[in-house]
Image (cartoon, rainbow, N blue to C red):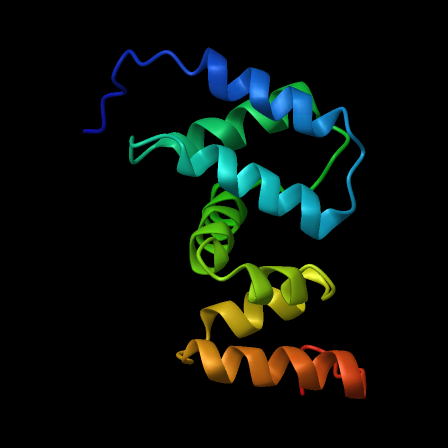
Length: 125
């Protein structure tokens, strides 16, 4: 049985509220949320952020636990690669997820990002 630990997430929730108030474009919003989740060491931070977002912002979709883990992974993937992060910010979220979740080197990720931008590729390409 899973038992939740009594952990104070109030700082994380406040940071999420600050980001949500900024009305950022989708990929920038997701990167920011991923960064916030990365500041937490607890395994359940993405789940708690998901629950909070769904409760506080019921009209906004896309905040399942899986999506929040993807946001966290997106930030982690590119946090030490500012050029790739900048390029990724120009792509749609689904395109980023496809590239991020493929078993690619950073060099291949960059090639695919360039191709998406130059050729207008969709996620299926």
